[in-house]
Image (cartoon, rainbow, N blue to C red; front, top):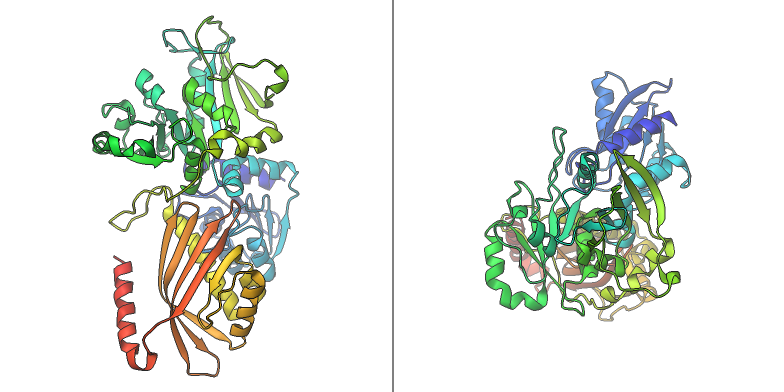
Length: 553
């Protein structure tokens, strides 16, 4: 598997650059066994690994026809910011694609390999327990975790003495670890899609918490999130002065009315305010924050905070990995790693599993992960139980038509693809595939029937009769809105029918809901336009044109 070894090394070079896309490497080998091209995923909106490898083949003056492609993640089969990589591989005439890891994205999972096989390309998927597959999964552990659980992989960084102290009683902690360990932390910051800290750390230490790698060019600064329930962060704080970095202050919705002036002063510095539902202690709900970060395409969250936030994350089961730096010194009385409740029985303590141990200069770095049972119990903790989402937490859309932070347009592209899948199934006359796009408790208010459909059987019955007329749907207007775990596609479409001059112009609204694994249609409303087509077609067409113009501005 020497080719995969190189592909994994290439994928590693995407770290800090490809987010929120996964880190992917690709190697192309000719029919005679010669490596003729390689590449890795670039910045969002730029070519993926497969495309870069094909470009490399062309630059070498070689031909990809009949070649074997080794790629660390299943090639994409849908339109996002870039065209599908599957189409490029098919057009290139490759003979075989070997995939290390199936894409966990429900929009892609298995569909890319199926598309390649349909085109006559041999596809091999490595066993999930193989060393290469494990390495590919580990490299994208945050992406896999977000796709499976809807929230980022949370990595808690700590630096302690042998007796578990993070600072002296007076707060002095400079420096517990030496320069080698501190330089290593920078690489973990670069790997993260975002950094999280608490307002206590900001007030006491006034840190920068920025990325300071010696390598050039340096990856973009990860956005910083500060848990600050009452917006106590001073406008002069150093975290607000880091160039080219977004800072989000996460406050409690219960305090929003009385914090208007503070919010305005902080926003004047360029900071963003994220109002979160409060937990039972009137603090921003951590579960709500993590779910929101997942919706904002954050794959890996790097936490550098004090005992209060560390303790809250650990108590509620929100930590997926501890990155523990241990210095060979004893401090005696001092500040603990985390504020945790007292125990009376050692049997109730979570025994973390050692994932990796490494010496860094005179210090030790441990990577620890909780047992699977402990991780699964996170959803039952009090913090998440206190949270009930009531509204979208997304920031207001840009008035300039640009992308909102963290890939909102990427989410819109995914929803658009799902909507197109509905239309494709309709054109093919496949009612079962169409019905599978609807949630189990979905409701359909159909175009040409007055009877609501509330079950899959009723929805399928409607489409079986509707498809008997061989409808063709043309989208006249489409508008996508993204909310918290919800998306709405609305607009106008026209149905024509095989062998008939009849046209039905209608309004539609599809509501999509994220169930933790995939998007499903939760409600679908379609109603014929009230105007008669034969008398009002010009008026309708004019209105459609106007609405298109508005939607593009």
